[in-house]
Image (cartoon, rainbow, N blue to C red; front, side, top):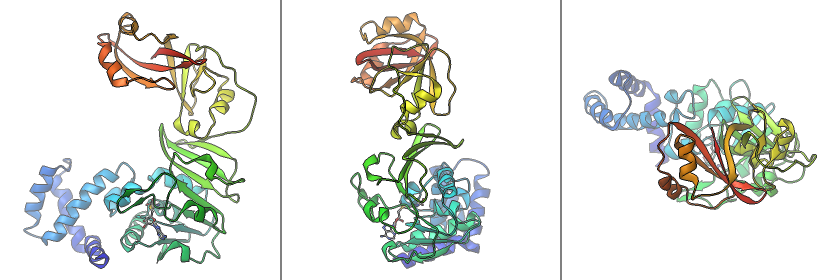
Amino acid sequence: MDTDAIARLEALAGPQGEAVFAAITAGLDGAPYTDAAALRLGTALRRTFPAELVAEALTQTALRGRAATKFDRAGEMLLTRAGWEQASPEIVARHTAARLPGRVADLCCGIGGDLLALAPGREVLAVDRDPVHLWLAEHNARAYGGAPSMLLADVRDVDLRGFDAVFVDPARRSGGGRMRTGESEPPLQWCVGLPVPVGIKAAPGVDHAVAPPGWELEFVAVERELKEAVLWSPGLAGVRARATILPGGDSLVATPGEPVEVRDPGRFLLDPNPAVTRAGAVEDLARLTRTWKIDERIAFLSADTRVTTPFARTLEVIDSGPWDQKRLPRKLRDLDIGAVDIRRRGLAGDVDALHRTLKLQGSRRATLVMTRVRDKPWGLVCL
Ligand SMILES: C[S@@+](CC[C@H](N)C(=O)[O-])C[C@H]1O[C@@H](n2cnc3c(N)ncnc32)[C@H](O)[C@@H]1O
């Protein structure tokens, strides 16, 4: 079965496969790849190429199109759907690779999302027990100029002597779907016990308690989208918890400090990046930006002057007061608000139902924030 799959991939990567991909590109002539285009191209190409090769190439073209959100060179990669979905986005992989020194072992390399950033310019051993993933990882790393050594094995059987560091991205899905929260293969406990400096990729929702003393937990976001968490062992750790925002690479460290004042919202509201919130660094952000909290437990900050920071989105407050749903439609009309994005934090409520009752008709777009101020239900209208 795997042998067949690999034989098909080899055909795709060979001269005839290249010719089919070239014919698909020519046939599309810059137009988007749609089901209708696939049908048309399939019929035409089967006159010249084996039907199976054409079908495989069309599937890869569809996968490449979707994977282009993650990889700059998706058009040169070969993929499986499950493989690319689990793969690290290139921008995140580059960030993690830069934290790993010297000769590295990439354990559980999958289809090579991390390997493509790790391998160029250094010695890397990539290991996976799935032969198709291993084949794809090598192909994809080569598309990025890497030449890793590949090993088909259970990562538990690999001799790690001589490596400066290890990166491990355990599977959090099995054949049937997602594993339970906190479960992975190999388990996190095994990864944490590795006898070399190690970075372990984990779900962004990972519990801080999984990081043993001396380890760092890094939460990585691309712009405002939280992508992953990485546990760094003491040899690679710098701090206890950190938020990193890509593409800029700005990083905010959670450290104990002076308590942050809690008071009513001012002219601006800061909505921290989710990586900052997950890293427990909201108070650090407040100290850094000289802003205050609007509630002891809610992750919004406020200021009277506009704050520009990579760690939060700053909104201008045009109305602020205790939550009063009955008067809200009238208030929004008076403020000339014709469309709202509703942001709810710390206040229960059905956002869709609320949306329907608003019957908006103004000319401005606003963010409606449903939250708590010093534990009282509160609403803010922000631009
Ligand atoms: C989340 S994916 C890795 C994704 C990869 N880092 C990327 O960016 O493409 C997990 C991989 O771990 C492999 N795997 C799970 N348990 C393993 C084990 N005990 N030994 C070797 N590979 C394993 C699976 O076959 C799968 O390819």
